[in-house]
Each structure stands twice: as C-alpha cells, then as structure tokens.
Image 1 (cartoon, one colour):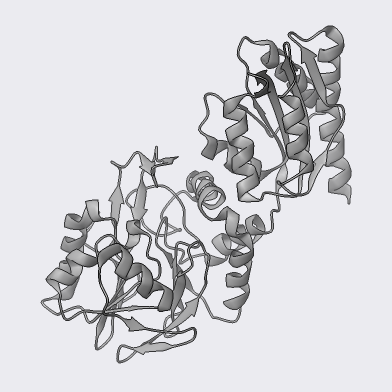
Image 2 (cartoon, rainbow, N blue to C red; image 1 turned 60 degrees about the vertical axis):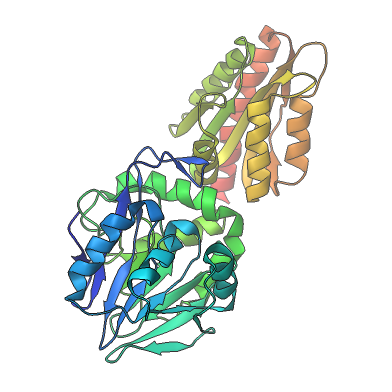
Length: 401
C-alpha cells in the first residue's frame, strides 16, 4: 500500500494491512487477513484518529511521517482501546511526547491499565475539539463493542470515524474505498466480523445508529475494512438489519457425526429441503468448520437445523461449543429443526431441545424432532425428510406474513 491515501484533501488513511496474524483475538481465523485503519486529520493542528496493532508499527509510522511534512502531531483521538487499535500508543508517544491523547472517561481507565499512561484530555458526549478550520465532535457509543467505544464526527466534510462499528475482516487489496473493491467479496467477512465480534451487543448498535441518525454522514471511516465513501448507507443498512436479527431466506444445516449415522440423517434432511425447492442451503460439519463461520451463517439465514450424536451421555462436544456460542451471542428470531442419534443413553437431542427452549431466545421449533437409536431406520430417515420439508414450508408461511 502507498504511504497514506487521501480520503479527502485534509484527511488521509495511514493504516496498515496484516496478512500474518492467523487468529483475530486469538480466536477467529483470518484467511484473508485484516486491516487496521488509522486516519490523519489536518486542520491548523493535526490529529490522528486511532492507531494500529503494535506488530505493524514500522509500516504505520512510515505512513504517518510521509504525511506530516516535518510537522508534529497535536492530538491522538482514541475511539477504541482494544490493542489492535491502541497497540501503538506508547511508541507513538515516545516519538511525539507533546502529543495530547483524547478520549472519554472510560478510555482513561483502559489507557492506564494497558499502558500505564495517565495523562489525557477527557471528553464527554457531544464535546468538540477545534483543530482550527475544522471541529471534531465526539459521540459516545458504549458497548459497540467495549465500554469506552465512541465515534468522532467531522461536520465540515461529513466524515464519521466509526471505531469498530461498520467494519469487517479482510486486508485491503489495493483499493481502500467501497467503490474500488468487490463488496460482494467482502460481505461474508463483514458479516462474520459483525456476528462474532459485535453481534452480542445489538441493542447498543441500534442505540448508536439512532444517535447518529441526524448527522449528515457522507463518508464512514471504520477501523477495519473498506472506507465507505460512495454508499455509506450500504454498511449502515447491513448493521441495522443484522442488529435487529433480521435474516435472509435460506437454511443452515450444522451436523456432527462420529461414524456416519447422523450424517445419513443429515442427507435425508437435505433431500427434504431440496424437494421443497429451496436453493440457499448451507451444510456444515461442526467438526470441520470453524465456529465463526457457523455463527455467521446462522446470523445470515432464517432457518437453522442442528444434528448431533450423543457423546459420553451428553451433546457432541463441537456441537455443544456451537450452541453455547449462539446462546452467548443472544441470536433470536430463527426457525429451528433438530435431529440426532444416541447409543446406550440420551443426552444429544435432549440437550438441543433444552437449548431451543431456553437461553438462545425466540426459537421457532419445527416438528418432527428426530432421534435415532444407534443408526437410523427407514422411518427415521423418512422423518428427517419430513423435517426438511416442514422447515421450508414454515419459511414460506413466515414470508407471506
């Protein structure tokens, strides 16, 4: 990437790409990398908005220096304290000791705990920072997705520096703007980011969208993913729908199988789905697909079908991990089907049934619930096909209102 790319005449992207980190937060795979976006805002005074992960600091500081023309940085605005955005603060302060750090009261607590830094300028919701020739206004958006998160709005050019909101996984591939990249290519990784990182905090996301509804936003500059200058409404619309748990028509089948018996039942369910002519079907083996992709597809599509064997008198461990994540993320408003197998004891399908009744929210459970003893009989397979048909019919009924 170039040493800084102009967003406008007075705002420059100085971020970095990371194609070496395998797991975001030590959990989520990054097969297409990730970017850390930082922005230099030029008025009479100069402000940096967020920094980058420490491991990419060398490239970052080259980008920053190339834009300064020997000038100093007056302010560092911290919208979010997570170390992939604040990790360079200490090194930046060593290079520019007169720099003033700007953040809210909760930012101050994290700044001291992470980096031992106690000096900063504390701002409240609605406060402004005058750079001379432009003012930056701060909007506190707590729990999107940390307690201190906020957004910074430049009213002069209608630019929203959005922190982790409206972002996504994926390194930037040459172009940095929504009109320069293949948004369809990015969309799956944007949703995987939302559902796994932000999705638990849907109410705060809705609060943030409502809070900013009156602002004339022409450009959205997130800390991850493309910059939205052509159609910022695209990403706001996605975050709005996803945070209201709206879903697209389609079915996700997630199954586990030790010796192929539960897999045979899954194939019968899939045959039932196909009979009802639904094309958007995603089938995942829970043992072979990372849970982040399972969460993403469960968030995207209206129906979810779970199939699991019993293991040591309980639910198959990879399936157990998946439903625990779904419960934690508080996904609701989905149609659900269940099937599975057991040997000498139950524990698989019964656990899934308890999941459907309890903590995940408003699951619409579709009959039949199919449980086979050891291996499925013809009657069991017929019931699985019927489950597939019933799921699609329920979706049709719901679509008609």
